[in-house]
Amino acid sequence: MLPKLSIYNRQRGHKIALPWLRKIGAAAMPACVAAIRSSEAPLSDMPLVEVSIVSDKEIARVHGEFLDDPTPTDVITFHHGEILISADTADRQGREHSQPFDHEIALYLVHGLLHLAGWDDHEKKDAREMALRQSAILRDALKAV
Image (cartoon, rainbow, N blue to C red; front, side, top):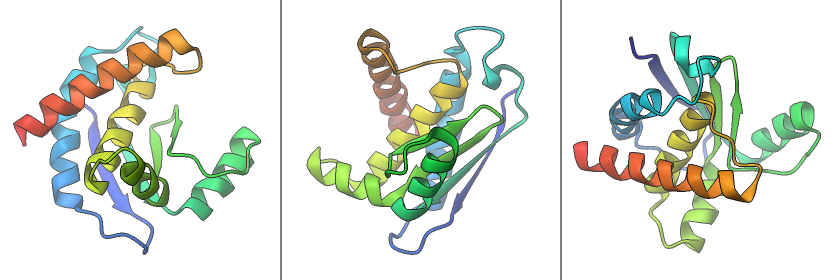
């Protein structure tokens, strides 16, 4: 059984296309589950994944509290099934990479789901593998929606 995906907009600075993002998440979920790296990956038996789209200020607060780095970041994934996505970072990074804002948010969603599937991006080789996988999953999800 696939985990249920709940997505919430908890920031006010950016308009988020939540119905579209929910469709992208639903389309990407089977591929993320299929990409589970071990039976110990949280996504393997998770009933619900909750995604909150927040501001840089909020994600920096959480980043500092839980990871000892009080700077904004794009995505924070907790193994209990919570993903935080910074809308401000998605806006900035999207412009830098010539990607639409919604595409960048969707990329971060897939990135967080892959972390729950046991993927890691701390080492260069792992980051490259993960980036390739998330690009393929996002591409297929965008085609499906």
